[in-house]
Image (tube, rainbow, N blue to C red; front, side):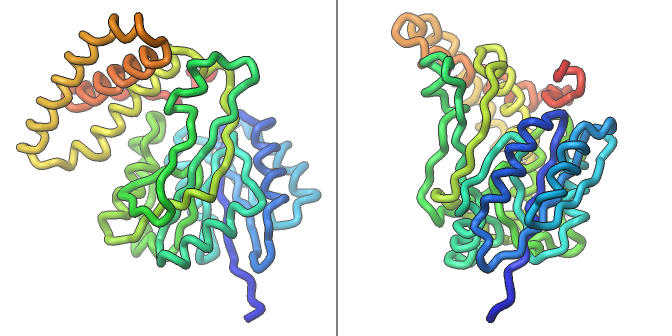
Length: 307
């Protein structure tokens, strides 16, 4: 009865040592009663730009910290390397630009046990700069997604999740490197897990916060993210549709695109925040349609995009 629940907390990082330090510090504040925490940090930069931050953290960390390097820049390979270090029955993923509250893990575990789940996902709340424009504060990309706790899901993200290691099956499920520079590897991973009859749920109380840099508060960034997300949607979900369902889906999306383009100038006159949302949705639809007809993928996480 006195045995502690072992949990590996995994995160991949790429050239964000300052934000990583904040993430690691927040983990030291976790309510660890009944838990034994182990942290796995995978540096996806072959130049090991996170090493100094992790080594400094290891000196005072209240738990074991594992540091490893995935030299090939590929977020799927980095996450797979993290999985190779997992030793406990449960593991969590969080991003290197997020901070977690003290009750983060205990809340996720409670939901997992209550709903007999194999994976539990929580919301991410964006922390905008003080000088962020008003329109950014109502954009879905930066707002917390809300669902009823216990809601069943078909997929999810690695920015806030707790997983039973046994749910990976044999041979263990892994992230697909084909998504390594485009993103979408987590949606694909958990969608495949869902199709092995695993139970994926939402926990609305397990909130983490994400630092939103000023560089993202532009129409250019939002539209590119929308385009990339649209392509990922097609690769993960639409590609698995039956041919007839694809035809119906295409017809609906084409009509949405035409309607959106017609509406844009009128929406712009009425409300700028609505104009931003509509144009981002249009770019997402363009990304979806391009993903259906072209194999060329927008690689949002390619190294030269960080320069």
